[in-house]
Image 1 (cartoon, rainbow, N blue to C red):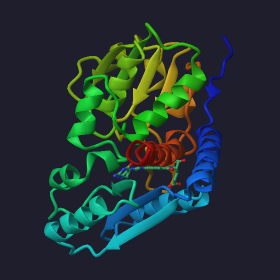
Image 2 (image 1 turned 135 degrees about the vertical axis):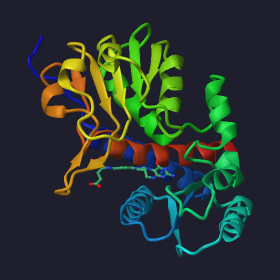
Image 3 (image 1 turned 135 degrees about the horizontal axis):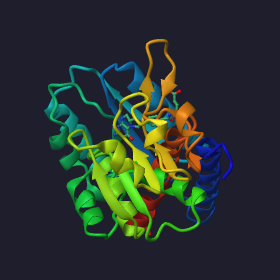
Length: 286
Ligand SMILES: Nc1nc(=O)c2c([nH]1)NC[C@@H]1CN(c3ccc(C(=O)N[C@@H](CCC(=O)O)C(=O)O)cc3)C=[N+]21
């Protein structure tokens, strides 16, 4: 075995995926005069959210989509946000709606997500889409889990029968990525903060997906030699550096393949948002 893991280049994979979507958008425009539309709604001034929304807006525009960011003040009421969503639901030129999370505390996230037309829910968070995923019938699938699977398929020729351990059980990542791994015929374990002897559970895994939100949480000696490691964590250290949930410096000497942070799952998440917008366009407008 080589003494260093293959680094899975999410930045390159995301650029290739965006280029492919861009070609499809151009063909739709040429053949039908239609432009898929992505609308991102941001409430408030959270600096990280502003950066993410600007990046989504820019990348959607770059591939020729109609890209609109709706920036609403922090004091926007739940009723006002619901009215905004209702108007986007009713607008036929809107294919994808993403409400950037987290929302200000006075707005109930579940109420807002439930109000999005499931056919336009490019985040894949609406209970209809989550329910379809749990039943193995995909509607719109959450972007980060989709990105994880695309990166995993680059690292491994076949997933069927492999042991996968997902660390984290969030609605946004842990649960949906576990469903996708199950669809790929992996044997799936969802581990979390109450899991006993987590290190021993992770050591069984041919595939590790770390989505806990704690810097350097997964240690090198938890990794089975040769395993594929997908690091979903985006943690900012006190000195402003981005680090994942996996101790990369340790894990790289044990894993067979590993995603870096930055440059791994993050860029794929945004590329998959654009892919979902195209998927929603096709499902709605043929
Ligand atoms: N409704 C909703 N859907 C989301 O999908 C959603 C959200 N809200 N709220 C916040 C989280 C976070 N998220 C990221 C997307 C891309 C990068 C990304 O591209 N990261 C770069 C680095 C960017 C940097 O330098 O800050 C990288 O990992 O290489 C990170 C994080 C989507 N989220």
